[in-house]
Image 1 (cartoon, rainbow, N blue to C red):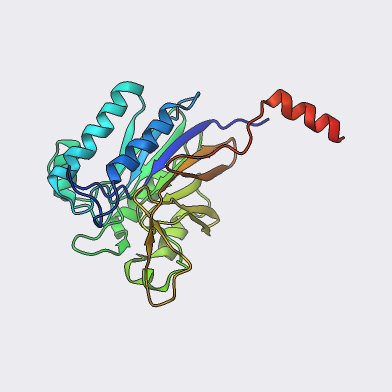
Image 2: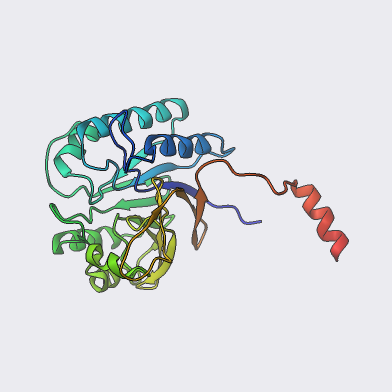
Length: 278
């Protein structure tokens, strides 16, 4: 049985609101994030990192960032698992940096983190004052320079806006611009998978020969069966488990909240069942 060399938990689109508020008057987004992090704490093998991939606060309210940071830092103190941030279109660079990083500045928040021999590159695909995403020529050049030297365990690339089409036509107005240019940078690189968020539904595609994944949102889910002239958000969140193997990577959607068990067996019981079948 092949085991992953690295595991990253991706939690996207948390849309945290200040204490006492509910998102759209209905969703306790802080509770959803807390529930996801509680799942992570129960894993027998801790992940290498948790990635929060944008739209961290719903309106970039400093009180929302403080609330998010308190949840994340308490989790980090209990587990020792690093938590990494990415910018989303609902975030604002100055408030994001001040609230989460104790830093100033409005430049794109691009960064690299080595998780053992695995490289995680996080790009800021936001456009200040807009909801669509894109990367500047300078960002693409920086990415190409970084990828020119392969990482021993490969690379995971993360950005908020998914560089792929959507089954929901109205998402085109807030889509990622410059997909072809990013694909050219990725082609032939050591990037095992591109992970994103923004759309509020899990989905997969391909760009430059590299798998692209959209994580479900922890806040709520976008209904992809809506009529072409509308959007519908429905109750229920999800996050993603990313596993990186020797030559490949996979992303798996995980629902947030109570899950009723259908069956549970041990590996010994499974082997016994398979022997009976053969």
